[in-house]
Every structure is written in structure tokens, then in C-alpha cells.
Amino acid sequence: MTSGIPPESIVPHGVPPASWAAIGAEPDNGGWRIPERDADGEIIGWSRRFPDGSKGFVKGGHRGLTMPPSLSAYGGSTEDDPIFVVEGATDAAALHGLGLDAIGRPSAHGGVNFLAHLLRNLHVCIISENDGTAGAPGAFKVADRLKAVCMSVKVIFPPAGVKDAREWVAQGATKEALLAASKDAPQVADSFLPPIEGGREGNEFNPRPVTELGPAAPTNWLWNGYIAEGHVSLLTGYWKAGKSTLLAHVCRDMVLGGGLTEASVYGDILIVSEESESLWCLRRDEVGLPSAVQVGFPESLARMSLGEWLHFIERIRTLARERNYRLVVFDTITNIWPVINENDASQVTAALKPLRALARDGVSVLLIHHPKKNSEGGELSRGSGALLGFVDIIVDFTLAVPNDPNSRRRVLKCRSRFPECPSEVVIELTDAGYVVIGAPSRAASGDRQMVIDGLLVGRPGGLTPDDLISAWPTKPAPSVKTITADLKAGFASGRWRRLGTGRRNDAYRYALASGFVSFPDGVLGEGNESGAGIAAGEVAP
Image (tube, rainbow, N blue to C red; front, side, top):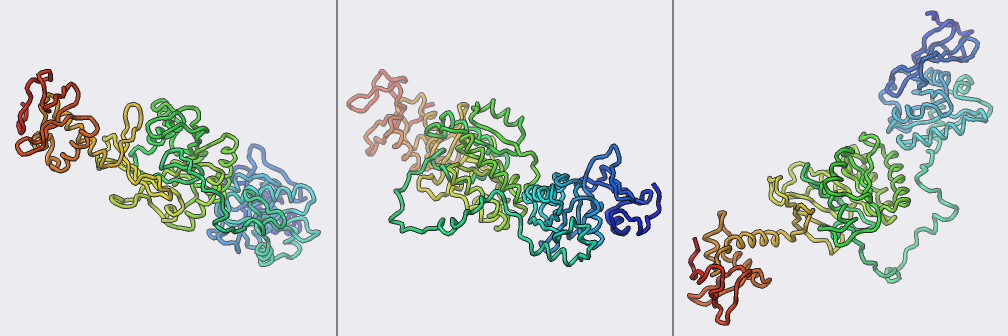
């Protein structure tokens, strides 16, 4: 390799030395040795352009992109100043000679993966070749891939009779002319949107009187009150509070029946998870997840672009039809969707819209979400209110006993478009799975009744409300009104027997129903566990 710059008379392909230097090319025996780079700007190979116009490639390298080590800081940031993508090093050098940001791909549709990584969220204009062979198909194939990750993608052609970008520049094209051509070109259509047939768009929107609508269809619940067919639910819970464990039990109960769902659901479940495969293996074995529960792991947890997200949802829609998915879960949504700023309503809305198409296919959608900081006593879900406005059912998942992660009880607080949704329910994780305890007041009453059961053991003569309060194991004890209500409920359900007349000097006493014998006069007979019993107001030792 020589250091001398070739004279203008033998410049290969008619590209001036300054243009070659702009892409990092080095003089090489009257020609040029040109670096080819990966998406990070690292040199992975060297191509060659000889004085006679022929081409070559240095053995041992790999084909990559022709460009400077880094692009302009603002290149591609607006649609008026795109990054130009061309075919080959000479086209790239010619455009850089005009002061444009340009990248040369090694062939008609080569280097696409590098381009997709490098040009994410930028505006791009592809200059196709007028060669009548692979040029135009290659340009549109590259465009089809880039529109999944770029803010905008356009394809332009040199004038008739002009082969490529280098020849276009050689015939007098200026920077302003190329930018104008890009600005006037339409964006490449998004393939995930079906083409509109002639005249159809004018007939799709046809309002009707509400009285002519069909009969109201009953809501089909997969998890009663929380996940409805064809609707979107949002479950928000504190970090490491057991959201994924709850999800595993819900999915198992949906398929096999269990403590959380009334009946099993026909169909499969897809979980798009941020967690590792090994964690799901452990959860599968621990909970007993069946094969109808399928788990998908995105190839990378790097945040998707909006285009990638749209194509990803389309892929899920296709899988849902092929595999009969009844429920699709995103755990957690914020590690997958293309939202950079969760407080930006426009970003959040754009990311959520494709999920509505999935729901309209009849698929239930569950979004698992993290809470905002300092959310005690208020709205859990973090970020823009657009998320809460979009979903149909909002579920907050919290500890039943604050600051006690060892408690096996959790609370589900729900707000919904559906009247069937309970506002607040306590659930408890048992060895057999989650069971529904009921409303918090009922759960608290159930806890007190268990304490009362313990206090009544060995006291067949019964205890009055005052006796129970005196013997209560924790302080402060419940009020007389609360204990009396619990006792009445337990008596009505047959849990306890009631003794005495309830009159002055003969207060009601309550005893365990098991093993007791009732006599007409309301007193305990000698056949009871502890003989004659305990007088009113007396607490047995």
C-alpha cells in the first residue's frame, strides 16, 4: 500500500479523493482501500477499488457497511435531514463528498442487520439503483426491514438513464436536490397495515341507531372479575410481592380449575416474560403448570422500537390464531414495549393501540406493571394516566398486612368497566394454591372467629363477649360490638352454640358446637366434655 493520493485523472469510478477520505478510505497503489464496519463502527473488513475501476476484497475479513467511524450527531434526527442508504462504497463516498450522511451496504440487500441496529429511531432515505435487475427489489427489501425500527423510511430513484447515486452526483446533483427528492418522496407503506381495496374505506364506518344494535352479549370471564375475554387488564403490584407467583397460580387454575377460577378455560395461555427460563422451570415444577401454559422470551430485553413492537404484536396475533391462545400476558409490560418516557401520553398510547387489535381478535390481554414510588394509600400504577384510561380492568395487588412480606395473604383491589368486578378481595396462598378469603371485612372477621374458636376450646359452658375480650391474646382487643357481631354470625352459620336467655343476669354464652348436647331448657347436660360448665362471666383456667 502506498501513501500517495491518486491523481484526479485516475480516480477510480470518478469519485474525488476528498470524497473517499470522508469515509475513511486509504490510498492504495493508485486506488483505494476502504474499511467496512459493523453497526458499532468497528472495522471488520477491507474492500478495494483499483485505478481501472475494478473491485476486490481483502481476504480474512467480513462484509460490512461503508461509512465514517461515526455518523453526524444530528443526522437522521428529522425527516428533512435523513441518513441516505446506498449500494456500494462509491455511492457512499460520492454523497459524503456533498456533505450528506450516507451509508453504503455491501450488496443489493446486504448488511441489513447492521443497518437495523445502527439506524434505530432515525429517518432514512434509500437511493435505489436503476440497473433493471436487483437494484429496486433490493432497495425495497432493505426498506421493509428498516421500517420496523426507523422513524421513517423512503425510497428514491435517480433520474431516468442515470444508474446510481454516484452517477447522479457526477451529472450535477447537489445536496439540496437530493434532500428535496427525499422530502417529496412518500414513506414506505407499513406491511402490518393491510392495503385498503378500492372504495372499501368509504363503507367501513357506518353508524347505526343504538336500538338496532344486536343483543348484549354476556361477559365471558377467564378469571372472574379480573380477566375478561377480548378485553385488556392491568395488574400492578409491588416489587417481589409475588406477582409472577400469582400469575402462575392463575394460569394453572384457568387450565385445570382451582381456588381462583370457577371453571377451567379451553385454550392455551401465552406469557411473554422478562424472567429467565430457569425461573419458569422452577415455577412450573412448584406450581404444577400444564403444557397449555406457554412462555416466550424476547430475544433481547433491549427496548423495542415502535416499528419492532408493531411487528411483534402482529406475530403474536398470528400465533394466537394458530395455537388458540385465550390469554396473552406481558410480564412486565414496561420491559418490552417501545415507550422511552412512561409519563408521555402519546408514547404510551401509540404502544397500547396494537393491543386493542389483539383483544378484538377475542384474546384476553393481561399487562403486569410495576408501581410508582410512594404509592401507599393511592394509585399504584406508575406513568401516564393514558395506560389506566386504555385498559378495561385495573387490578392493584398489595400485601394484606403492610410491611409483612412473610404474610401469605394478598389483597386484590379492582376498578373496572364491568359491574361484576369486586372492589376488594383478600386471597391467601395455601399449600394447595391460592384460595379466596373474601372482602377484607370478611377476612378480618374470619381471623377473629379463629381466635374465638381457640378461646372456646375446653370451655363447654361457653363464654360471653366480655369473657372473650378479657381473654383476647392481643391488645387492643376488638370492641364488644365487633365481637358480638362475629358471635352472631358464627351462631347463625352453626359454628357455635348459644346458651342462656340473653336477659339480665343471664347473658348469652357461646360454645363450640362440636360435641355439645342440647336440652329443652337450654343448659348443658352431663354428657358434655367438661361436665357442668362455667358460670356466666367466669373464664376457665
